[in-house]
Length: 168
Image (cartoon, helix red, strand yellow):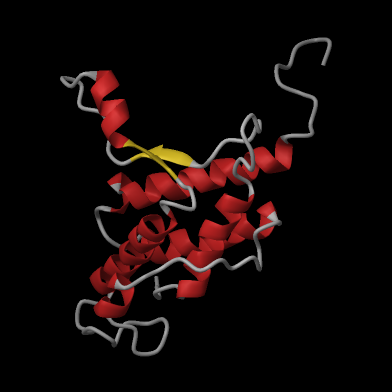
C-alpha cells in the first residue's frame, strides 16, 4: 500500500466543506461537526469528560483542526516510509515538518457545496492517513468521522423517512 501526504489545499477543502454545512445563524437547525478528543475513561465523571473533550469545527477552531488533520497524515506517511527524511516524503514536493506546523486554514470552496465530492476527498485522506498504528484511536479519525456524518446528513436531510415499519 502506498501513501502520500495530502496537500494543504486538500485539508483546507475538508475544513471548508464542514464549515459550509455548519449553522449560519442563531436557531439554525444545522449543527457543527463535533467529536471527542479522546475516548471516555470508565472511572471518570462523564460530565467532566464531555466538557473537557468535546470538540466542534468552527471558524475559530479551523486552524487547530486543520493542523491536527495534516499532522496526522504526515505521521502516517512518515511511519509508512521510515527511511524518508523530513522534506522527502511522498506528497507536496519538499514538504517539511516545519511547514506542516505552520498550517493556517484558508477557505477552499472547491468541494464545499458538494457532500459527495467531500466524501470522496475524505476517503482519499483516510487512505493516506491510516498507515500508522495510532490512527484507529486518533482524534483525527474521530474528526473525519464527524465530517463524514455531517456530509451524509446533508445528503439525506430531505428524505422523509426515519423508522421503517409495514406502513413505510
